[in-house]
Amino acid sequence: MTTQSPLFSFEFYPPKTEEGAENLHLVHSKLAQLNPDFFSVTFGAGGSTRDKTFDTVVGIQAKGIAAAPHLSCVASTKDNIRQILKDYQDHGIARIVALRGDIPSGMMSAGEFRYANELVDFIRQETGDYFQIHVAAYPEVHPQASNASEDFKNFKRKVDAGANAAITQYFYNAEAYFYFQDNCAKHGIDIPIVPGIMPITQYAQLFRFSEMCGADIPRWMRKRLESFGDDRDSVQAFGLDLVSKLCQRLLDNGAPGLHFYTMNQSAPTLAILDNISH
Ligand code: FAD
Image (tube, rainbow, N blue to C red; front, side):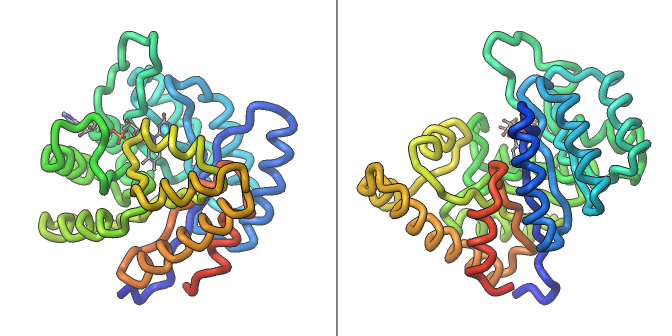
């Protein structure tokens, strides 16, 4: 049972258009009222959003609540990571979500860092303890891992390199998270492992995305979602009930907080947080 108040964080992607930027401004102001621990901003595959991620992070930080850029190894060199770290330090940004990223199809080389543990190590070498570093964790196992125990060893490498906290890939099987937590305790890993939460608002995209990132949609859940067909209201009502219960169970059983993949929408996240006691 957790005794401290849970930490909440909200993830955005950098908007591509002016309309997207206006929407994000509104979404941010609604979610900011919950006074989250921080907002994070994703980094496009292969570094494609580098400038947009930077501008979005700096804009959010200037509004008063901490912002954390995601930073990925793919297509990055030591020189450009060094420069980005300096730029973030100059703007008072003190948290980073450090990732490997995925190699976009057609791109041949991964860059100078092969795995996220090497990026964490580099950030520590260059900037000491300045940054609070978050890394990714996979309670349902990373889709490219040779097996679960190798994947866990690789997760531990990131912790040993100096990660302060982890955010999980989203999942709908709470047991996978509890096993992961137990495994961390057995291996002396005591950093917060914050569940990543994906609200359910429609299902075609959720199925596609889950296929790619290795998140399991249990059969009963898939069948229920499919049965709603084009009835979006029923999909959303079912999704809200299911994800709210998941969040409540996670918090009641020791999760230190929740990180929401908001998809730049405020309503689904607000509805879930309204449903749970925290
Ligand atoms: P790693 O920890 O490097 O692991 C990748 C794979 O390599 C795993 O299978 C692991 O077992 C294996 N491995 C790790 N280290 C070693 C090693 N030393 N030797 C051998 N094998 C090893 N992607 C983006 O492009 N942009 C984002 O903004 C973004 N944000 C994300 C946020 C969160 C919270 C999460 C969970 C994921 C995010 N992703 C993002 C997706 C992420 O980049 C992919 O899941 C990617 O495939 C793995 O990244 P990682 O940092 O977990 O990699």
